[in-house]
Image 1 (cartoon, rainbow over the protein chains, first blue to last red):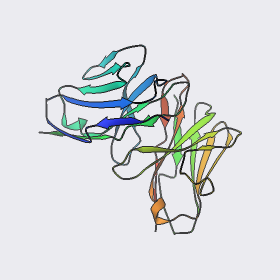
Image 2 (cartoon, rainbow over the protein chains, first blue to last red):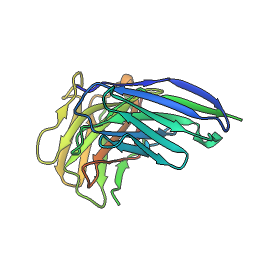
Image 3 (cartoon, chains in turn brown, cyan):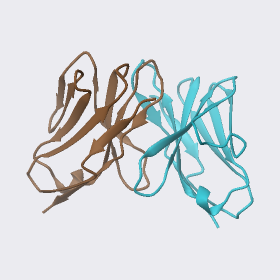
Length: 112
Length: 115
């Protein structure tokens, strides 16, 4: 089955700096890669996603890049703010409403 | 659109008792529901996939007789934790695929504490 690895597990940045979280996946059939932000005790919130037919997608301060050949995808947050502090999960799916496999999570802390 | 309502949000039960968690799709028909468990500071681990009108598919290592899943209608899937033990204490969350081939809707989660 699919295996998604995520790094780093914790990340501290200064406010205004950029943060990058990386994931790798194993199943070449995976074609949908969402990123979620989860606050303690809450449901995951989708912040951005990318399908395998594109290599990059951007939404204001957030961007995701995908390298299908290397089976890598990354989340980029620019101009970080304290409210960006949370746990972030990458995930993958082979589409068609099939199951999501989650990465191990990254605790992002944005310090003043 | 695409809202999944999950109840209860929190439950405390005694060891040996059973607890039922419900997930309802409010504005769409969910033929599939994914059930995840999340331990503190850990990732979401898929436990099982429920399909309306058929038996659930369990992930390796998940006890079918302990975690009973029922998906009797297109809007309701339930997870029953039977004979609960303290080690079952966790955050349980359901998720349904959206109307397109991509995207998922999550319930709000259930914090189960077994004492």
